[in-house]
Length: 338
Image 1 (cartoon, rainbow, N blue to C red):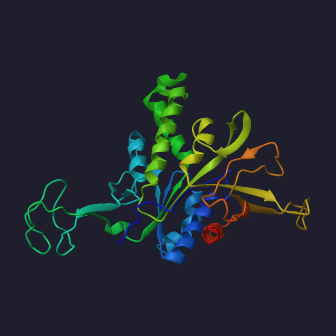
Image 2: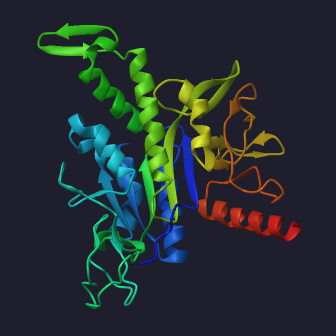
Image 3: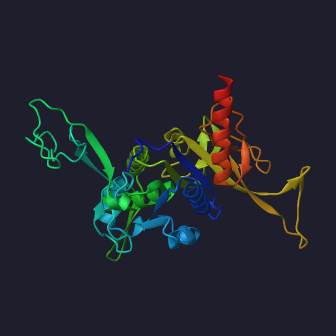
């Protein structure tokens, strides 16, 4: 299997709870499956809603899900590190089952292009596949191949950044209860977060996102809850993590940051209602910084990887297929203008 060297896009979608983040993951994978035959994996720490949104894809063998929050808390830092490098449980349904790597590295024979048998810096006198001896000073190319269980996987999603941060903070409070205030309730110790805890958690989240940028897949998707932060003294809404500083700091980590929002449908500025007098709601994906009509004093973070002169719309219906199609059109238009 020919493996990508890195994802084309590392997308973050953020929204309020129940806004449809898990559904967008399912829609993204459905599109990639139908167009490229790509299967996906989802590392979930965000509760049961993710499982429900993905059930049709799981039942058809298009998607696998790993509930990482069920793994041992004592090793959650290292488990998340491996997960964001593509490692996967041998049995996702059994908590703490051994993790397996996504790829193997091997050295290619100069004669048959098969597995030479050479490992690391150690050279072998002859190819283990064809048996031909290697001339003195031969340099063998290093190749990477998907492990059997990783064959066909081209999409990974992490649900989500906020939940990962919560797990890290919980572990830090237990490992270092001196960081903040500590209350004893019988034999039970209740600890609050210290300032150092936030910095540690943010640092590791940055590393985990960086890990995901090296995955041998076509696309990576993260989700997060919505949070109010600060941008040079002005109110800013963006992805939620440990500490408000992460809301602005994490935007450069991703190629695309999409704000998913549920808004009242308007026609000519008037809110539309159904026959029962209830507001008609519609989900929208915002692709650039914006000020929603119902909260004009607040700026919401968003960005797209489309070229500036590609004519990418600023807001679309909440459809990942629409997003990918518009992105492709934008790159095509920008290329035609060169």
